[in-house]
Image (tube, rainbow, N blue to C red; front, side, top):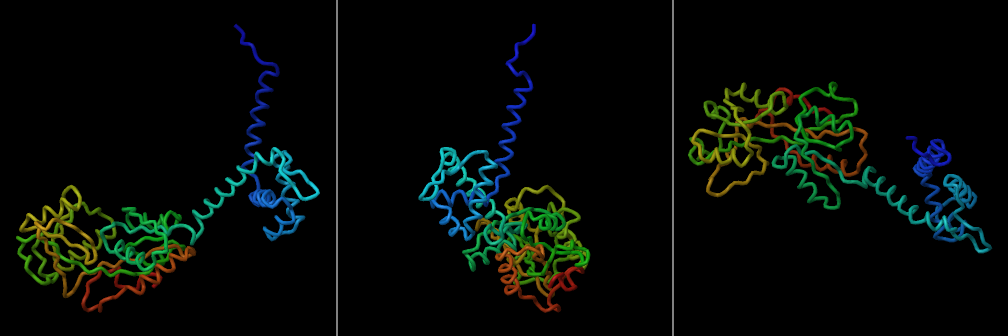
Length: 345
């Protein structure tokens, strides 16, 4: 059985499809300046007033409207003695033209520095970068922030900054400046001292402070620390420097489970940053004990693209510099890669 075909057959159907695609393509390529001029002329009812509103010549308005009419293959205006009025096609196009301009404005605002939120990776919402960023927001509530936790190592975070996925991130920078991508800038902004976190039954629970040497022989439990990360390298160096036992074995059930285990144990302890935020029930009676003489310090840097002109990023860098208070070298211990000036400082 042979199927009947409409007159014109395949060629006629293909021509109709091509015309639809062609119209769609022309519409997508419409000049936004011409659309903006069309809307201004429609609102004013005169090319001269539209020209004044757009700070261009009346001739430029006429050229833009003519180009738009050519692109759309319709007449948008009827010229009258008093000015111009919309044709039926012009009236149909006007609401879509306004929507085009609104979409363009939203698209522009989403990426233009100063008009979109500053995207900052704080690594973890419990640690010092998140605390400092919240303090920054309190000082500058007019700044819109997009606070992220990529939960990634420094290499992946730098790649995200370089690609423009985020504006900035906080990490320990373990390599010299010459080994970083050319676009990347860093400055050390956080020197985070450590505290020992223990339960009430631990041998050091009643100490006002402890030294790193006193921690030797005690089990410091930090399960799930990924090898090869900058923080794993930090704790490897810390353990080697003071003969510590840092146990990373075991599944990760979350901070709440870790705190519960430490509260019930007379042997387990962990290390937390001085400015980190952890909450637990009063019944746990956990103790945060400063580690001193020397104080192990985790050095963290702000990382950003040097060509990022977002005004909020400049304010953030200035704020962090003003908040940094470095302890004398004699009173702290930092890893080898932190003993040279931070890149970009």
